[in-house]
Image 1 (cartoon, rainbow, N blue to C red):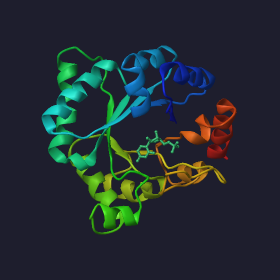
Image 2: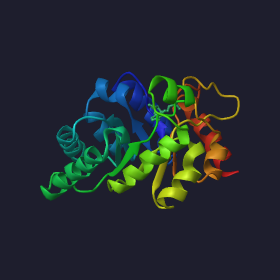
Image 3: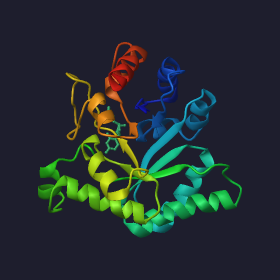
Image 4: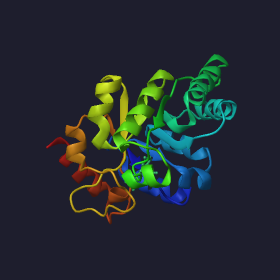
Length: 232
Ligand SMILES: O=c1ccn([C@@H]2O[C@H](COP(=O)(O)O)[C@@H](O)[C@H]2O)c(=O)[nH]1
């Protein structure tokens, strides 16, 4: 999944066109969605991309239900919420999608996943800033189990945690992992990272990659290099 973190539709579609035919998904996050609006989803779908809408809903259950219903109408293939919103909030996301399907507003059910702990969070952020005791992995696993109990399809986590999540929640529970950095790439604000190769070896279902591809002089070539690294 390539994170199309671009400031407007034109820049995002220019990038998407360079990646067309590679088989990658397009991930639409806050920067692009707030700038380009819902129409960007249709533009990407028309170019053959499967779309992960990464808006990380986190609100009271009733609001998340309505938001999820609206998202289901857009025809995205996957979207997410924050597990930190709790069981009822995540169940409300599922209900919102079911309402859209029952009302004939959406033709297919998108995958719904939940962010466990952001990959920019480290041990100190968790314990000292957020006041959550224990290790990051323990916090991630608590969120993953809650997400499964709520009936969602999987979680967003670091590739470092995939083995533990699969052991706790089962092999078919999806793991979607940002925090991917090829050897020598700039780490930026990410904290819990691995290489594309190690992420694949660790059993992740979907790798999410932004700047190592989008910041490259030739994004299509950067993607191909990463795809090669994943499979060798
Ligand atoms: O825990 C999370 C959840 C979402 N993301 C998003 O993934 C990409 C990663 O981009 P890079 O440039 O490869 O760091 C970005 O869109 C984030 O919003 C995440 O990184 N961690």
